[in-house]
Image (cartoon, rainbow, N blue to C red; front, side, top):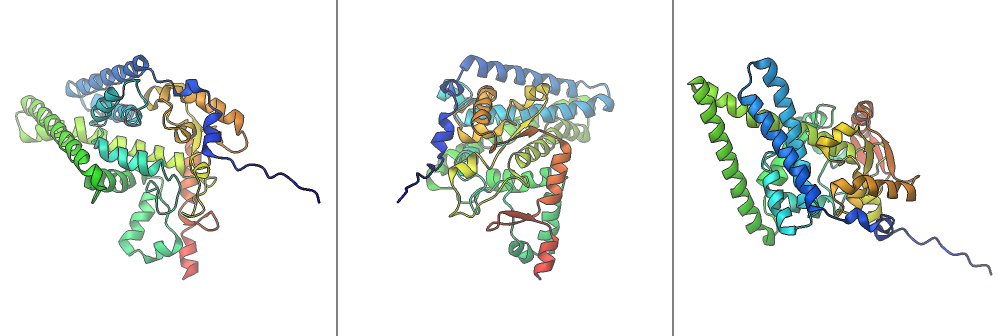
Length: 352
């Protein structure tokens, strides 16, 4: 009787091992350079808004400020993973400070992002970020729920989805976190609220000083803090979407999911122009980041090369194109977890 050897099942450790150890080498100097550069650019942008000669300068500067908040957020996200510098205490400090412009609570982010999203990527009932709904779940929604879903899963949905589902529900409101996280989240919430109050007070003072009226004070708060934050939510919501939502990416029922299907197959490598990486810090090279959270953002190009060489026919690697995002928002509406397929809204009508 002839025996055949089965191919060993691929594990996440096997994927991690294809990346050189140098990919996990943290550099305090390089991390602090990125932080210093981004903080100075953000500060200069805010000063530009404060001393803007007119609306024609204010509008583009607010957009730039939104991008700068996104850049600081990505660095804060890296620090929250403990990867930005070679000093763990410094990483925790930087994580708290760099997440303030995006109004995120550091410890709530660590719980929701590091533990849940990274721990259960594209897993049904576990990964809360851009989690698809089934035909039955969509049918059970009321009229308002269906309209909201249609908006949030449309090309214009990144901002309202991220604001509601991620920022408000999982970061700010966050009902009943695990007991061991309660104290840390409460402290970081107080820190964030104090920083927000201080920023709003300072902005109101400058606006009132310049205009001598309440509306000028409110407008200064809006253009320095609120509008850049809203632009940031659109940017980060869309970024997370293209990292994990695509007709090529399968979401898995809880019992059939495994770490490789989540971290290698459930993410993307999207190539963006080099100058965009000055802001997004290589986070669009997302697959190696999910395979190993210890990799600093500035080592992701090296790690990406190693993964793509080892798994050229498995990892998703392509140029980022707006038309691909638009195509995904047309295709990815409802989901059949058993079949592993995306469905249109018409599937809910046909089921009835």
